[in-house]
Amino acid sequence: MKPPKLAICNFIEEVLRLKRFALANGFAGVDWTFRADDLPATPLEESRLAGKIAQLHPLEVRYHLAFEAVDLGDAVDSRAEYAMTVFRRACALVARLDGRFMTIHLGLGRASTVGLSWERTLGALADLVRYGKSLGVTVCLENLAWGWSSRPELFEKLIRKSRAGVTLDIGHARVCPSVETQRYAFEDFVAPHPETVVNAHIYHEERDDRHLPPDSLDDLRQRLDILSGLPCDWWVLELREEQALLATLEVVRAYWNGGSHRQSPSDLATIL
Image (cartoon, rainbow, N blue to C red):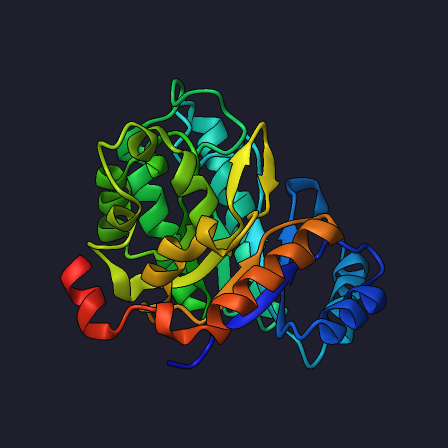
């Protein structure tokens, strides 16, 4: 089985230094994160951003929208309308940057789902997915460590009813209540829709809002076994400290160099 493309976050502000770091360490891409206030507000700002992205060539670039408290399913009409405007604007920007994949979240930055509407979320997510498709952009939903997307049974409904792609965050999946209480297993985030997983975020686990690297291959092996049997070819080592990132890279490379540990397609079909 062919190894996936490995990508890093845009954790180094100076874009040419980011590119040099990526190429020097064998990465094939950059997962470029936008905050809501990062979006260019003028044509000049967009032109400058496009220039930065162009400097990353030949690295592939995909996009990750970390918009806290900007929710498509907000129960307040004006806030939901604003959220859709922001996400559509971001989607159109990604298309103009020749991006093909955009990851979003539901409930990011909230302590609970109070103030969110499930039905509105479903409808708005499906609308955004259709809008992205019209622009050639696949809108992907990431599973979080809490909330609706942290529950495999609800995540499945969100993906099935919206037709969104999946960004599988293996660190979030490990610490979510559904898995920690053993009501569900990690593979339950994958089993209903393996063909829709197009991005993965790789690190050990999230604790106190920090992404922690694995101590050894044993920390990741079982989850990578599942992931390596999927059509997903984009693994983002989602750590923003150089030492932790390189430690995780070493573990991921050890995994692929020891191919006997990976699941065969027939084994994976049995698991899923």
